[in-house]
Image 1: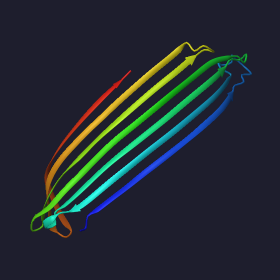
Image 2 (image 1 turned 45 degrees about the horizontal axis):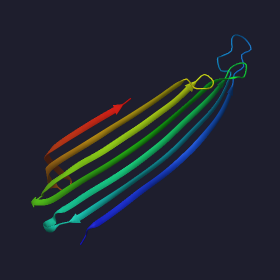
Image 3 (image 1 turned 120 degrees about the vertical axis):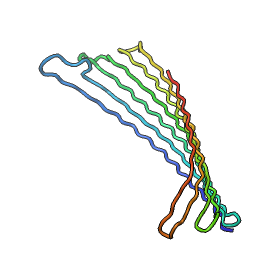
Image 4 (image 1 turned 90 degrees about the vertical axis):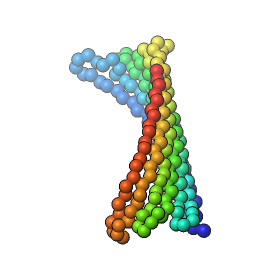
Length: 193
């Protein structure tokens, strides 16, 4: 009957680790607070996206085209630094952990139907929702134990929806005119510490 249903999905995962060592020598003048520094940086990232598309032919030349999708993303970043004073003693112990999660959903649709010679009535919608959640935790100390700790959390949400209708006028095979109306709304919220 000419109807089609298609789907595609993508999955990606990655990770890396970086280890670095730095030594500073000062032949002349005062040495820096940390003449030695060891650093370990790690990152892990996972993402998944999927899309679904349905095209359905209706009677009298009408057609319905509907799409829906979802995506999920997660990242974890960790950083750890050890600083040593000129005497070689541990003088800095700093660790930072950040986790981020993102989720999104979308849907679009279009209905079209011929309404006369060269004219077609089209109407549809476009909607989506996304959320981002981020947590950051840091321990900062001069040697051990660590006297300074921070914890930050952040959450944001975006919701949007649009509806439209238009007359699609095919004047010639190479010239088309579109006239219509569109309404769109968006709402955003955020919170954090």
